[in-house]
Length: 345
Image (cartoon, rainbow, N blue to C red; front, side, top):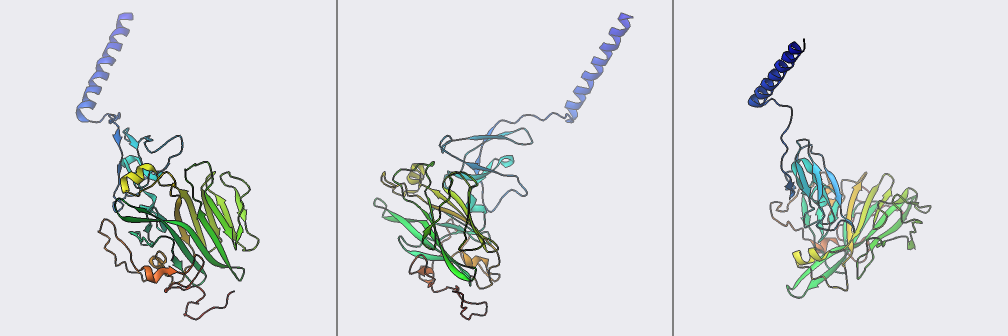
């Protein structure tokens, strides 16, 4: 009986080995070969993976520029993620394709870095403006957003660089005009635990009681206006219900960025500026401004989008006399859809 049982076991083993050999020969094994890990590469914004899943990568004091995130795809391959040099602090990672993208390359309604904008049509362009001057980014009948530019001169190259230092948002709420200031506070040395975002409504400081993520402030003077911290420091979302949402992040220029782009950063100024995202609701068909014009239903992009750095000119059209001035040449603020001046005050 024992001998008979042993014969059965031996037969089963032979059959299993035969099946395994056949499966290997015909490639029908359920086990997937483990692929060697790869290092991510910056993706082409014009060739974003279709229906790809992405992860937002944010560096901090524990994970500096050389931080690498390991992610494993459905196929068993590992990918080491590093953000592109143009956006070292935050990026989007498509692990399955081992590609990374800057948020400003993909998100409509953004302005980042050496001012690089992504319009509502999905195309990215540069608008350099001028140091210590204000330009209208969005101008509509009940909303006007100016940006004040800061800058730095590289004596070695003779080039001037600019970034968005603050926003002046003029809007209508409760039948009255209000002015909202969103700015990045200057710092000689960057400390990510210290809040560099400055907010004021109609000249009065907006004081968020807590430096904790999701802390929230609501305005009594401007119905529907709220400010929410999206991180413990240096990141907020400002929303006027039914009108707009502006997300602002205060970020420095890193030493690596300065070396790579020749920004000429010195030890006396970390060049803190704003990276900004915008979402709008109910803009009129006549909206204008550096970014606002891209939201027009009849907008035609005349920039050379095949160029490495498409640049939008027209500084004179968009220049405002002050951060809260609505006097740029293309201003639409206070005008109804038919072009007549409205009397909101």
